[in-house]
Length: 190
Image (cartoon, rainbow, N blue to C red):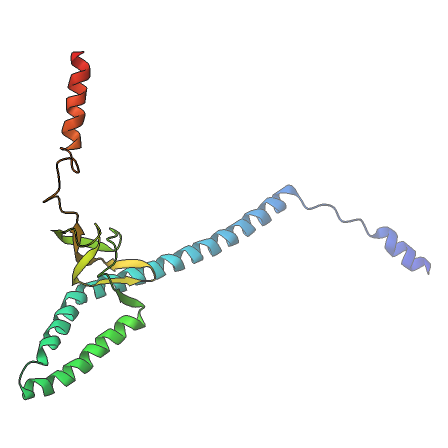
């Protein structure tokens, strides 16, 4: 090595650690970038939720019209030849509506014969009978619809309830609330 190289190496000072202020600014910068990224993701998720809610809410408004359309077409087969020819075109329109529902992942679910579930069904009528287990859905007034596990509209159904007609008094006692009140008054008097 030459003397010049040795002198240059001696003149080079070791790097001093950066000042604390510089470290704080860098930390704040990186935190701001992370915060902006989180905010972007949160806004994207909120946007998707709003779009999903809007789709579901709008389609929910069309469901009664769609069902009325389906019901009307069921009776077209019993009508005159001219009405039956018209119904072919209306069946095509109905299939287009159903295709739109499937495009957005909206499906009708079957309820008749299943057990009543308040998350999926709305009981419109109750029939007392011993022919079916209690809570069995006997009829469906309107279909239920769901999208990705989220209920858009519950099915409106008729459910079975155990009949108390013809049962013996031993099978069904009086109202339990009244019995509890009677027990309470008996305990207080003693």
